[in-house]
Length: 177
Image (cartoon, rainbow, N blue to C red; front, side, top):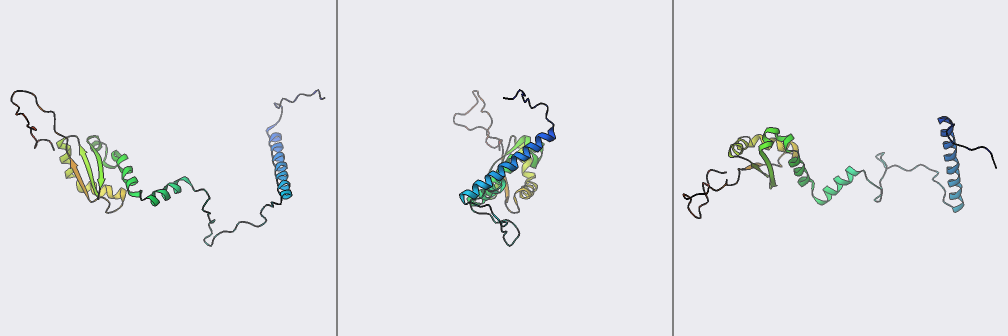
């Protein structure tokens, strides 16, 4: 038995790195000899590349995450709905903070974006800006994707209570929207 106790604290970083590299080389040599015994020789020639210079990918090879998502969206036909969802999610960046504070996109169907406004004044403002908004949305989604902006004002306001109200009446319907 040895009287020396190794604490590992007195080693220099260079010495420990050299020992680590030597250990790695030793393990690699051992793995190669084990493969040789089993008859599984490592490749002696380099991998072939396709004519374009890029490595050819087998069907089972992993893809980068972004490319895998793009391929999935294309295969399922979800490219446009995802793009529209992205625009709806970035509404304040696209239309500006003032307009976004009083409006929100509600749906997109057949080239028509339905925008809800929280007051009739803001609904009128969006109607006046509709052509500019169509251009801006087409910049984000691609030309011709959005053909029309339809604006919906606020729903009917609170119904007044009191004796002057006619039963069954829906109130001043032309005031809201």
